[in-house]
Image (cartoon, rainbow, N blue to C red):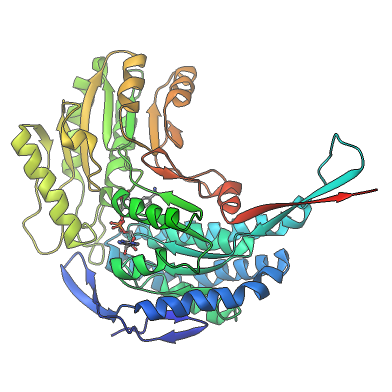
Length: 476
Ligand code: NAD
């Protein structure tokens, strides 16, 4: 049983009614348990964050930057432990767990740098009208609730925690019940750095704990990453209290491959876009649009590459893809395999759960999928790729944009003018040209349409935790 809630600078036992099992998905077996936080403990965490706000927002931005650099450094010192727990609890291959850790470290260092620049951004506003001066103050939004999912727990939490703390906000973080262990490092680091008590609070639990936090009247903002279903509930609670919300939701993103591509290179990008993290990425490029004239050469090579991937337990050998992270996700992906069979889709690779312990499925490819198939339109969140052919650039753009989501897209073409033109026409928050899933902390993250509201990362990620105030003075 793990003591896992960090409230007002102290580690406490959960007093909720849910017992959370922490599983090793490669074995399909639990290896730890913890009791969820109760609603009263969520209250205590919000009260602690409220109590710490005056002190934290009064610290200088450079002092806050010092803490953020401390977080980056301390994450680095816990390197092996943090890689290990992500491999065991998420089923991530080692190289993926390493990249997640480096991403989290880069995020804290980046927002430390932005925090150091903050005072210079408190600037005079030139006014056309005589007799007045005005200046801009960027103030912290206040007490912020942060609710995150399980697919990139260390990273998703870093993308929220670092800018929120940089801006001078105090926070209550609720990790996913599927992966509650890795983010405990943030509480341990807060302890090690003597971060003022209450600035960072962590409460663990399932939907009930999440709802207690998102419905809490003591928050000034909520930032949520997760499914559209829960996102709309979170938005309802924000609307009931007329307070701001950032939503990072699902995706069903396109990868558009034109016929001037090197086929082997394109296959590499396509495979990475659907098998990284076993396809459990909001940004998975799960809809392949391939130009007619290259499709017959590309699809067999794609099939062969997917079939050759090493799928297995990341803790016992080198693998290209691990298991799905939870049994619920494994059952969900298997249900899409059943739907594909009912719909009579043409399966070129995979299409089945693996007959072994743990929550493994094979990397899967369906070809010539009708555009009204559930597999083409719904987010599956697994290594399941659907392909369609297109003839013209206009058709590729129209098909890529024909989705209720708008998170990311990839364009592969040797004709860079065309690739840039297509990138401009795609209705998404981020486009990669001749690359895949390359996320840099300086660029934004977030989607259009059903993929969410607001942006993380870059200066936009910091603005999400700032409130703009103007002070106007009459000179007369
Ligand atoms: P989820 O919505 O089920 O859970 C997300 C978090 O919300 C968890 O911490 C959960 O405990 C909590 N929660 C559940 N019910 C709640 C409620 N009623 N009120 C408040 N909180 C509640 O999502 P998931 O299965 O953990 O994650 C997968 C989803 O996340 C996918 O749809 C994926 O696309 C999305 N996602 C989006 C991004 C992005 O940046 N756009 C990144 C990662 C994941």
